[in-house]
Length: 132
Image (tube, rainbow, N blue to C red; front, top):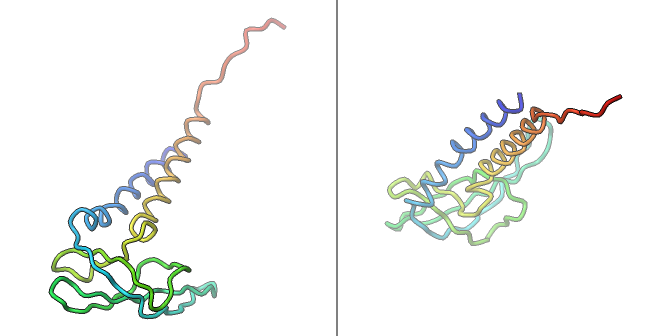
């Protein structure tokens, strides 16, 4: 079971990292600004503050997007680095480690811990040769 969890999480890690890898390798860099933080409640009643940011693309057109990552350290008026694919401003993300790699990192850690657990559970146990 732990091995299955490990394989699924490792696969999820790879899938989750592909869009970020594409942005880092082929994306354009820009500077954005946090316009506001929108408060939203989840089903459990917890409040999440979603950063709404804007940036200008290489042609000078301004775009306003919602961050895909909730960060308690963000504040209105804060300047942020932005990555986006050329000709696809809707792909923009705030260029910070947590936003780009957070989900992939968590899944990778779970995969590693699950694999370690599977190895420890299924390792051969030493036999005792002592006479009774």
